[in-house]
Length: 129
Image 1 (tube, rainbow, N blue to C red):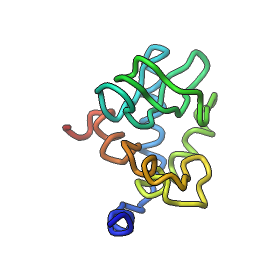
Image 2: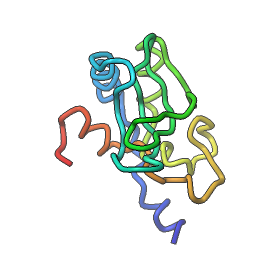
Image 3: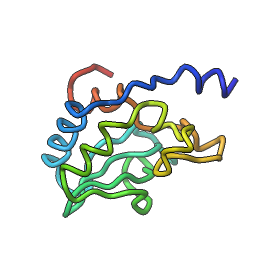
């Protein structure tokens, strides 16, 4: 079953347009706010949170009330856009061992409320929830 789900994940890169729009939208957020996949108690997946000097990727708990330590962080638009332009639903899911920022062998953590094209487009107002 897990492999069926893995094989259905979109592998198209997000692209520079989406990544640039994402950086711009995150820079308009106040520090501590950003892209949160789901708002509920306990584990809410991975999110992109505005920091005082850029953006961090981290685990989100309790609808954003708590964040884990940065998994990765970006201070400049260019490095953020370069990184996210090449990502896809598949790489963000944790299934791709070639993408160490997201990769995991933990079956519970893999593809559990991860960033996707749909989540990012919803955040950008390009898609309704």
